[in-house]
Each structure stands twice: as C-alpha cells, then as structure tokens.
Length: 235
Image (cartoon, rainbow, N blue to C red; front, side):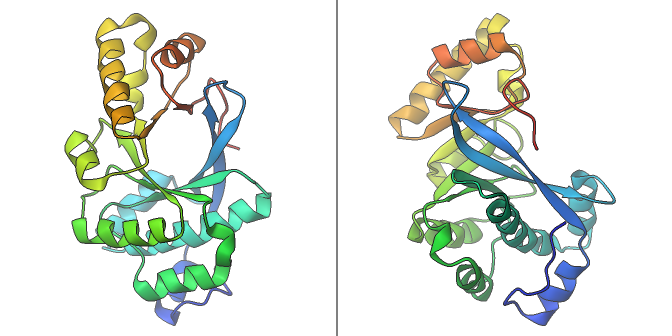
C-alpha cells in the first residue's frame, strides 16, 4: 500500500492524496534478448476498483491532477522500496503535469536518485496539452530522464503527436502487434514505423507481446524493446 503522509506538499493536495487507496505493480520492459530488463513500468492498482474506473471517476470530478501527482510520488516510492536498479517508466496524462511547486517538492523528496532513472510515458487520453507537455519535457530533460509516447496507434498518439513531442521512445500499441507473425499488412506497417522512428533516433517498444512467434518476428523487424505476457506479467 502506498501512503501519502510525509510528502512536502500543500495541504489541499495532501488531503486529496490521502483519500486514495492504491498499490503499484511493475511490469518489465526487455531488451531484444528477451532476458535483460531495460526498465520497469509502474502500474497503478486501486484496492477497491479497477484503474479504469478510478480514472473515469476522477475525470468526471475534474481531478485527474490528483492522480498525476499520486502516480509520480507513489510509483517512485514503490520503485525504490523494491530496490530496482533499472529505469522506471511512469504513466502521465498528456493533459496535465505537476505544478512547479509540486515538481520542486518531488525533487526535494527523492533528490538526485531520480536523475537518469525515469521514463515519463504520455498516455493516449484524455487530450493533449502543448503547454503541459512543454513544461513536463523541460523538467524531464533537465534531470537527464527520458520521454515516451505510450500506445502509439491508439487514441490521440499518432505520427503528428510524435513530431510535436519529440520523445526518446515510442511504444507501439497491442493493436499493431497482435497476430503480426501471420498478418503481412501489420509486418509492413511496423517495419515502416521502425525505420522511420530509428531515423529520428527514437527507440521502439512493442507492447502486448503474447506469443513467441510475435516476439521472434518483431526482433527480426528491428524492434528495440519488448513488453508483454509472453515475457513477463506485472508483479
């Protein structure tokens, strides 16, 4: 269980955070050998509802910012408690970012331990805010961390957004991956995307890899990193 009791934040946000009852699990992102962990993705797990239900509840209340702050502080707490040495990948709403005082508190709380260890994944919902992304991007790059576009090909994350966001990593949505070993159209599409992203010095992650045949085919197409139940479930 993540507890929000001793964070250097304003009382208003602290009160909102204390109302949350959440845990975090971590799913590894592997290099192309299928064994070496490149990063751990932190996944929120509410104790009394699904994460989708929680996000929808907070969206309707116009309180997604609370979940944004909770994810950064809670996921990093859980990450350090587990003692991981690889990078940690943290989901972030494209419509939001921490306020300046919250970002300062985050750095004060975790210190230099976060430098070069974080990947900030921009989700595919609810909408994209250029101003929030610019602020998020500045703080991430200042700490030598990485930016990632999650679920490419699903929701708002497409080539236009990649051009705007200039991330270090793009994660291909499961919809582009499922059955790729026997669907030539998907093979051609992913091959074109890999070549394009590599020309921009962007790493490509295949999400939702569930079959050995999919994994083997994607390795052959030059995909850099892999995530999915075939390799490991969240733990």
